[in-house]
Image 1: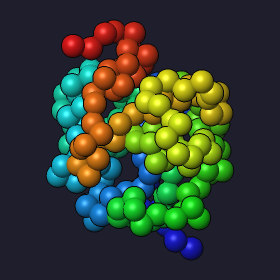
Image 2 (image 1 turned 180 degrees about the vertical axis):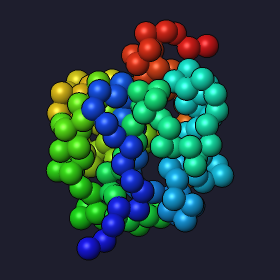
Image 3 (image 1 turned 90 degrees about the vertical axis):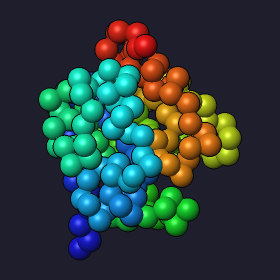
Image 4 (image 1 turned 90 degrees about the horizontal axis):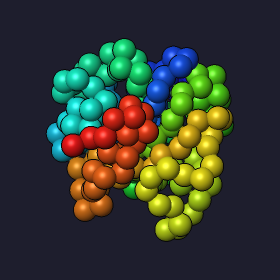
Length: 171
C-alpha cells in the first residue's frame, strides 16, 4: 500500500480547510505543505489575517489552533500538476474527509483541484465563493499560491475568503 505523501491536518469544527492538488516536489522531500521556495501560501495566510504571525512550512501541524486544516486531492503523488492524471484524484476520499470533519469552508488552492473535485471542466470555474458546497462546507476557489502559477495570482479572492472566515475586512 502506498502511503499519503503528506498527512492530512484535519479535525472536527475547523473554520476552513485548504485543499491543494498534490504535494509539490520540494514539499514531498521536506514533508511539509507549501514548502517550495516560490510558494506564497504561508506569507499570504498571515497577510490576510488568518494567522497572527508568518508560519514556516514545518509548522503546518499547528494550523488547527487557528481553525485551519490542510489536505490534498491527490494524496499519493507528488510533483508538478502537469504530471497528474485523472486516476490520481481521490474525490470520494476528499468528500468523506470533509463530511467527517465538517469544516465551515473548503478552500481550493488553485483551480485544478477544484475542477477535478467538482467535476467542472474548461474555463467555467470562477474564483471566489461557489454556488454549490461539498459535504455541507461552503466552497471557495482561490488563485494558486504556487510559484508556477504566478501569472494568475491575485490576492483579492484570498481576502474575500478571509472576510468569510473571520468577519473582519483585510487590509
